[in-house]
Length: 185
Image (cartoon, rainbow, N blue to C red; front, side, top):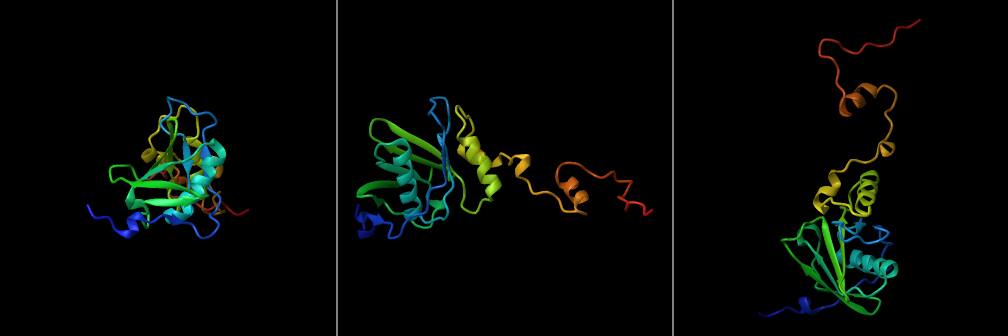
């Protein structure tokens, strides 16, 4: 197999990567499906993976050696990235869920994270990251975004929108009765 020069390149983030939006379980559990959630700010793997590796190294210690991702969810597919003088190998697997990233390192280090799409709203992403960081969570990464945001994170209906809000929140109008305006006194 002939490898291109691009396959052999080590990509380095040339600007300061954003702080990783990452939430990990306090203590890893052998029963948990996920170790936490990660909400990247873009689909640029060089910038986002540099940010993720930096955050994981700071929070969990140790060295990150490999990262496994699904290629359809990202704009480009570098095979190696340079982070703080170390090289991290990146594997792209079409069989992996798009909502999952697997990070490995020495001494059986393995961190499975749910990947929340960058365009996800804050309320949905916060609920998903909270769900993934619970000890002994049993939800798969692909099913995480089906968890609704908490009621306190929903926007309040504006005056006059209460009928529409009721319709979209599971209630319904009786078909034979239309809403009426309050009587004027």
